[in-house]
Image (cartoon, rainbow, N blue to C red; front, side, top):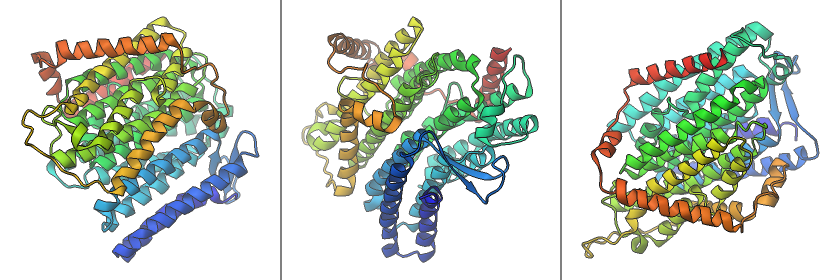
Length: 531
């Protein structure tokens, strides 16, 4: 069982290479036994791992851990591994009908899965840097896979800006190595001693966090995300938003644990508010369904940031919201893909009547809406409630309520597609196959199950009690429906009428040079905060 962490990295990579070399449609089916094997090994390893307390390490080569390659697993990494497995199953099943004969696509998809498993388990900064770089490159290939003009521009924008960001990770890594003499994360966690002022340790933290800010799409360096999501195939958008963006947040958690830099918690809470509000405002102004969902991802990342920086150090709410968001946002992107393929249109003002034409997709969109808006009995309510429960500042709680209203408001943009078309003779037909239905049904059920049976599930995976959150509290239901009414009224009064300021926001385009200026401002603000 000790070698399972290595196997779950190399099984998908080697399977992808085999599919690519054999280059035969029949061998593309290898992807299914590979996924079954990965799932089986992960479950067996978790049962083995669960007998231990704390952490399990795998030292490759028997070298001194300070200089060797070490894989580390704990409850956090194992939970993310299961999330990764679920998301890859959904993507593979959903894309099978369209991509079953595309060996190159599955080569890149499986290679990316293996690299992602490596990113989750590595215990040294250098290999973390390598895994992030490879993840960025393969994600770029998948974004521009359609090779349309929009996809190529978005993919290159994503690659260049993330490359600029990762350079600062390399700089921070060099600084911490010069200061401490090792890149082993566990060793650094014991050694690092945070001092006042801008010493090498603090500068390394700021440099690494600048890179993570780009990867995770923090304010104000998230401009690459809506471009990439809009241009990529819907199944890749689901993977990007549901999981790959979360790689930056996972690294954020690990780096924060390593440095233990408490002085930045308030900074990241404020940054989370700005990220959530600005993402919500941009989402409200959009008409393109994928752009709305993309900016919505930015807004939800802001909420996660708030949850990961609780003053008391409890990050449970932020972690759970990462998972909840992965499921309901992937559900929404996959549903959007079906809608776009059916109507051949992404403009929500031109799509009508999906309730009658696509009843299953209509139900999934509603599940996604109830989850993302935080309705009790759906997954988003749980994680948002945990985040609010742990907050010490009233202004942050009010900000979260405002963000919920923004969420409901921009989702009214999407819900207008339920309206009946004026021309009742217009009909759209789609023969949904099981490969489209299964992931959508599974993700819908997960969004409901995690909203109802959350206590035993999260106590099992995260070993933490959340008994203080209740589903049937009259005050919470009243607050939710009040926000629902306010969001609807804002949409009807201000948004639906398309005032000029909404058009200006929608047409705002931040160029690549200006994005880099914003990146410099982001770093400067962190430096000033530490001073």
